[in-house]
Image 1 (spheres, rainbow, N blue to C red):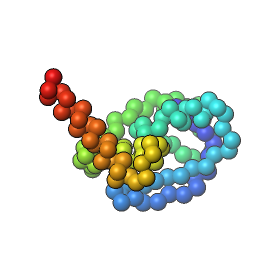
Image 2 (image 1 turned 90 degrees about the vertical axis):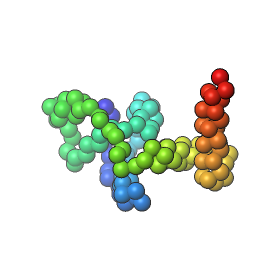
Image 3 (image 1 turned 120 degrees about the vertical axis):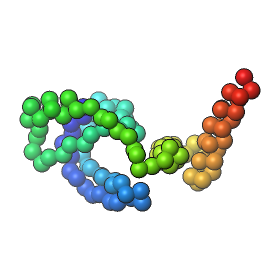
Image 4 (image 1 turned 60 degrees about the vertical axis):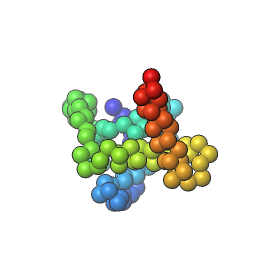
Length: 118
């Protein structure tokens, strides 16, 4: 569980009806940055309140288990979304997302085609 004092900076609606939420923090310790990095693209819970969490609240939050399934998107839409986030994180030299996406799909297709020949 990561608890970081922060300010809710903004939010916006996205095309797929999800919401992008932006928080701003003060300076973080290297371990806090590592905790954040280790959770990139993971599903979980977000709890926000203007006062610090009490111990009982922290215990309750820690006991929650994510049962995240994205039932509003097809598997191909979910794959495209993950690839979009990866492209934004590291475009691997591709100038546009369509070229990145096409290449990644070709790699996946070839991977599974090779299983047919085995």
